Image (cartoon, rainbow, N blue to C red; front, side, top):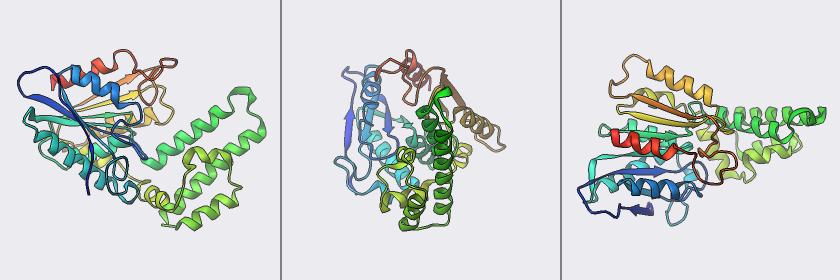
Length: 301
């Protein structure tokens, strides 16, 4: 299998530089992770940090198929990217770490835990709960926003409840390793509620197999197994991630007996920010202070 991506080196001459591997979120994410990575990449380069990002398996110029992979497979891809960046003569190998956004946070936590040579890891809007719990939270938030306040009539409330009940049946079907035809029978029997399209409008057999394989991933063992400093960013108004529950999980893992003394945890919650750490009405740009907090922490480590 071949991964394709882009390597950015700071323009200024000087000694060997630190580096970061950017790992994108769920779905068919490329090296830019839609529009999220380019401003992050530019900021890191301007701060003197080398940056490598890549197309997920089967996306862009990368071979393979992410839907046929496990999170462990995706972590192996991230680890290979890390080794490539560390092999560059302009980069100080022992100062290269991971930045994982959303699902990419699960990926880099798994990759970092499997290695003894990590200086640090950064997660961005990474749920501390399982995919099944996180996606139910996101679906419920979407359904609530679709019928806000007093405008939500009895029929709309019933539709939302039916949609969430169908979601729960699909999760249980996944735990029984039900095939795609069985899953679609459940959807058809529920009348194909339109709200479910937010969960997966593009569902096919390959995606169903990937989702049921991933749905009960528990990030706690990887959090406990970390042996390096961890910076975790969250947006306080993230509609996709249960932030309070995620913070509870991170705190509980931090207090587990046997956790490495090197595995310090720094949490930054930007109160008004969303899943991509943007403010309402702020366009695609990051919230003020976000990128500065990131580079300041990286320089300290």
